[in-house]
Length: 389
Picture: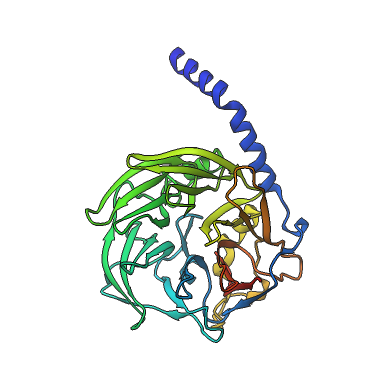
């Protein structure tokens, strides 16, 4: 007993100041009122598109060489979200859409999944494509168990040939994926405790910033998984260059920069964010785009109530009109990659009483050459397509 007290006292003495600092910043964000946020847009123009055909898009892969994107969308998130704790019904599943954004007249097309297991549902989160091998790796929180779904993309036939489902104890809660070679990817696991199995422990892990989340290195040839770093609520991940990677820590809130080497990752620096960061993407100019959640309390309300609204316009009896639903604000910023560099706000939408704008920002990416970018919303209809000069 005495030994335990001594250990706890030492841990509190060592961790107390940084935990207090993190606690203060998290509490500030949790108490933030969406209607007190300003509306900011640094874009030349933007438009919310495809509201009638896609919704709940969590992540986006952009190929700025060929001018197309792959969107990870899941209307079923209203009823099944193992990150936010919604566990109503997993049967309504998600899909992946190919969007040729270089063509102004193009619309997203649902990719046909071939040979996907019939006994497994599909709830996609993060994804990444290896353009050299056409291998698309997707994190999915299926009700049968979370894992990575590995496909081969055929853009001509608009199909995804399913090659393998990878489930591993070191991939308990896969969230974001980043290709680092033809046969390796880095995968973030947002929690150690799954919220739908251990809700109180998962919430404690989130709000106490316990480093239960991990970064895993996955060998796709050998189907081997190794844990290479631990991060509180590890979320989005992006390559900054050939030797460094950035990882979002949603609950701290910050993003961390790691140096990659053959044995793992070394933490080199971290940068606080004024919101809870979600996905990260790097554009061709080397700038890191960070999308996230300005008012997590409002996002939590959306996650709990979205299933009560007739968002697909099917006239379902007992469901409320979609315009009555709660909304949660967006915050997207960029970092220029310099240690002394400042972050610049790209899009901030507080969603005032009239419920305008685009909320729940979860990912942002940009084609610098074409001056086109995309923002996705975790619980939003359509996507935001912006233009810059």
